Length: 168
Image 1: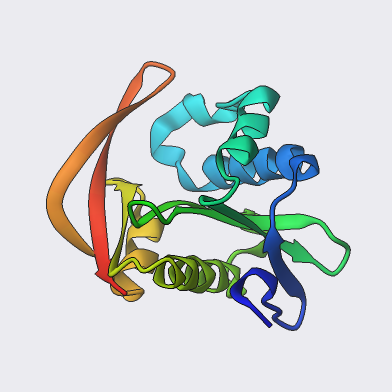
Image 2: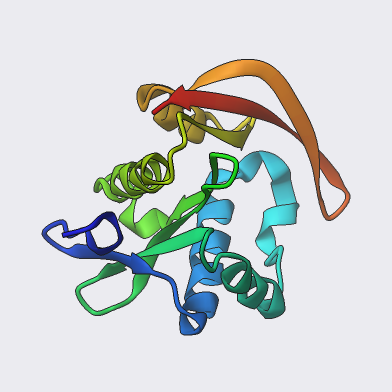
Protein backbone atom coordinates (compact mmCIF):
# COMPACT_ATOMS: atom_id res chain seq x y z
CA UNK A 1 0.00 0.00 0.00
CA UNK A 2 1.40 3.45 -0.90
CA UNK A 3 1.83 6.43 1.42
CA UNK A 4 -1.36 7.89 -0.03
CA UNK A 5 -3.35 4.75 0.88
CA UNK A 6 -1.91 3.88 4.30
CA UNK A 7 -4.02 1.88 6.74
CA UNK A 8 -3.98 1.59 10.50
CA UNK A 9 -6.52 -0.65 12.18
CA UNK A 10 -9.19 2.05 11.94
CA UNK A 11 -8.03 4.90 9.69
CA UNK A 12 -7.10 5.28 6.06
CA UNK A 13 -5.02 8.04 4.49
CA UNK A 14 -6.08 9.22 1.05
CA UNK A 15 -5.69 12.31 -1.11
CA UNK A 16 -8.21 15.02 -0.23
CA UNK A 17 -11.04 15.74 -2.64
CA UNK A 18 -13.11 18.88 -3.04
CA UNK A 19 -15.94 17.41 -0.96
CA UNK A 20 -13.58 17.12 2.04
CA UNK A 21 -13.26 20.91 2.41
CA UNK A 22 -15.99 21.37 5.09
CA UNK A 23 -14.65 18.46 7.15
CA UNK A 24 -11.07 19.74 6.89
CA UNK A 25 -12.26 23.12 8.15
CA UNK A 26 -14.14 21.45 11.01
CA UNK A 27 -11.02 19.50 12.06
CA UNK A 28 -8.97 22.70 11.96
CA UNK A 29 -11.51 24.66 14.02
CA UNK A 30 -11.81 21.92 16.66
CA UNK A 31 -8.03 21.47 16.88
CA UNK A 32 -7.46 25.21 17.17
CA UNK A 33 -10.09 25.60 19.89
CA UNK A 34 -8.44 22.80 21.88
CA UNK A 35 -4.79 23.55 21.19
CA UNK A 36 -4.39 27.27 20.58
CA UNK A 37 -5.88 28.43 23.89
CA UNK A 38 -3.04 30.95 24.15
CA UNK A 39 -4.93 32.98 21.51
CA UNK A 40 -7.84 33.50 23.91
CA UNK A 41 -11.27 34.35 22.51
CA UNK A 42 -9.87 34.53 18.98
CA UNK A 43 -10.28 30.75 18.62
CA UNK A 44 -13.97 30.75 19.54
CA UNK A 45 -15.01 31.59 15.97
CA UNK A 46 -13.79 29.92 12.78
CA UNK A 47 -10.68 31.64 11.43
CA UNK A 48 -11.32 30.76 7.79
CA UNK A 49 -14.33 30.69 5.47
CA UNK A 50 -15.66 27.77 3.47
CA UNK A 51 -14.13 29.41 0.40
CA UNK A 52 -10.73 29.36 2.16
CA UNK A 53 -11.02 25.59 2.65
CA UNK A 54 -12.07 25.10 -0.98
CA UNK A 55 -8.99 27.11 -1.98
CA UNK A 56 -6.74 24.99 0.26
CA UNK A 57 -7.78 21.91 -1.67
CA UNK A 58 -7.34 23.69 -5.01
CA UNK A 59 -3.87 24.84 -3.94
CA UNK A 60 -2.85 21.28 -3.05
CA UNK A 61 -3.32 19.57 -6.35
CA UNK A 62 -0.11 17.92 -7.57
CA UNK A 63 2.70 18.63 -7.19
CA UNK A 64 1.48 19.76 -3.73
CA UNK A 65 -0.15 17.10 -1.58
CA UNK A 66 -3.09 17.19 0.84
CA UNK A 67 -3.86 13.92 2.61
CA UNK A 68 -6.81 13.24 4.89
CA UNK A 69 -7.08 10.61 7.59
CA UNK A 70 -10.56 9.07 7.53
CA UNK A 71 -12.15 6.73 10.04
CA UNK A 72 -14.09 3.58 9.21
CA UNK A 73 -17.22 5.65 8.45
CA UNK A 74 -15.32 7.85 5.98
CA UNK A 75 -15.25 10.86 8.31
CA UNK A 76 -12.19 13.10 8.17
CA UNK A 77 -10.36 13.03 11.52
CA UNK A 78 -7.08 14.67 10.48
CA UNK A 79 -5.06 15.97 7.57
CA UNK A 80 -1.63 17.03 6.42
CA UNK A 81 -0.36 19.10 3.52
CA UNK A 82 3.13 19.17 2.02
CA UNK A 83 4.87 21.24 -0.62
CA UNK A 84 7.46 18.99 -2.29
CA UNK A 85 8.81 21.87 -4.37
CA UNK A 86 10.51 23.36 -1.32
CA UNK A 87 10.28 20.59 1.31
CA UNK A 88 7.66 22.27 3.47
CA UNK A 89 5.50 20.21 5.81
CA UNK A 90 2.76 22.84 5.51
CA UNK A 91 -0.11 21.66 7.74
CA UNK A 92 -0.90 18.86 10.16
CA UNK A 93 -4.06 18.82 12.27
CA UNK A 94 -5.94 16.04 14.07
CA UNK A 95 -9.39 16.43 15.57
CA UNK A 96 -8.92 16.59 19.37
CA UNK A 97 -11.47 13.81 19.82
CA UNK A 98 -8.97 11.52 18.08
CA UNK A 99 -5.77 12.84 19.70
CA UNK A 100 -3.34 10.36 21.20
CA UNK A 101 -4.24 7.50 18.84
CA UNK A 102 -1.27 7.78 16.47
CA UNK A 103 -3.08 9.64 13.70
CA UNK A 104 -0.70 12.59 13.86
CA UNK A 105 2.34 10.29 13.70
CA UNK A 106 0.80 8.42 10.77
CA UNK A 107 0.10 11.67 8.92
CA UNK A 108 3.60 12.96 9.68
CA UNK A 109 5.18 9.74 8.39
CA UNK A 110 3.11 9.99 5.19
CA UNK A 111 4.16 13.63 4.77
CA UNK A 112 7.81 12.66 5.17
CA UNK A 113 7.38 9.78 2.68
CA UNK A 114 5.88 12.17 0.12
CA UNK A 115 8.73 14.65 0.54
CA UNK A 116 11.35 11.88 0.29
CA UNK A 117 9.66 10.52 -2.84
CA UNK A 118 9.93 14.01 -4.35
CA UNK A 119 13.67 14.06 -3.63
CA UNK A 120 13.62 16.46 -0.68
CA UNK A 121 16.68 15.94 1.55
CA UNK A 122 15.03 17.73 4.48
CA UNK A 123 11.63 18.89 5.65
CA UNK A 124 10.80 22.15 7.32
CA UNK A 125 7.73 23.56 9.02
CA UNK A 126 6.61 26.55 11.03
CA UNK A 127 4.95 26.15 14.43
CA UNK A 128 3.62 28.70 16.90
CA UNK A 129 6.24 29.26 19.57
CA UNK A 130 3.52 28.86 22.24
CA UNK A 131 2.08 25.62 20.82
CA UNK A 132 3.76 23.32 23.35
CA UNK A 133 2.04 20.12 22.24
CA UNK A 134 3.01 20.58 18.58
CA UNK A 135 6.56 21.53 19.55
CA UNK A 136 6.84 18.33 21.63
CA UNK A 137 5.46 16.17 18.79
CA UNK A 138 7.81 17.66 16.20
CA UNK A 139 10.81 17.49 18.53
CA UNK A 140 10.07 13.80 19.20
CA UNK A 141 9.92 13.29 15.42
CA UNK A 142 13.41 14.72 15.00
CA UNK A 143 12.68 18.34 14.09
CA UNK A 144 15.03 21.00 15.44
CA UNK A 145 14.84 24.83 15.38
CA UNK A 146 17.10 26.36 12.76
CA UNK A 147 17.13 29.79 14.43
CA UNK A 148 14.75 31.51 12.01
CA UNK A 149 11.15 32.53 12.53
CA UNK A 150 8.29 34.50 11.04
CA UNK A 151 5.31 36.41 12.36
CA UNK A 152 1.80 35.53 11.19
CA UNK A 153 -1.37 37.50 11.68
CA UNK A 154 -4.59 35.82 12.84
CA UNK A 155 -7.35 38.43 12.65
CA UNK A 156 -5.12 41.14 14.04
CA UNK A 157 -3.25 38.97 16.55
CA UNK A 158 0.42 38.56 15.75
CA UNK A 159 1.90 35.11 16.39
CA UNK A 160 5.60 34.24 16.25
CA UNK A 161 6.29 30.96 14.48
CA UNK A 162 9.53 29.03 14.81
CA UNK A 163 11.02 27.29 11.78
CA UNK A 164 11.90 23.66 12.49
CA UNK A 165 13.88 21.37 10.17
CA UNK A 166 14.45 17.63 9.92
CA UNK A 167 16.78 15.63 7.75
CA UNK A 168 14.85 13.08 5.73
